Image 1 (cartoon, rainbow, N blue to C red):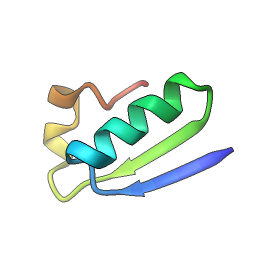
Image 2 (cartoon, rainbow, N blue to C red; image 1 turned 90 degrees about the vertical axis):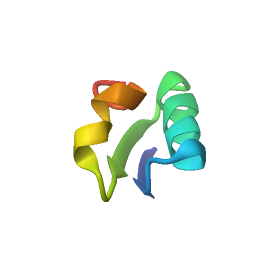
Image 3 (spheres, rainbow, N blue to C red; image 1 turned 90 degrees about the horizontal axis):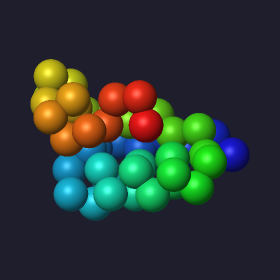
Image 4 (spheres, rainbow, N blue to C red; image 1 turned 60 degrees about the vertical axis):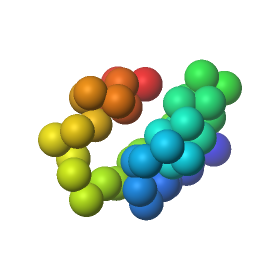
Length: 44
């Protein structure tokens, strides 16, 4: 399944990580993309 999330905060980031670990293809959009690596949201 392909999943897209708008927002990479506490909820969006957690959902992205869980779905990626479950084998889903996840894309995340954020108002502050420079913060994505700090949250571990690149290359899930």
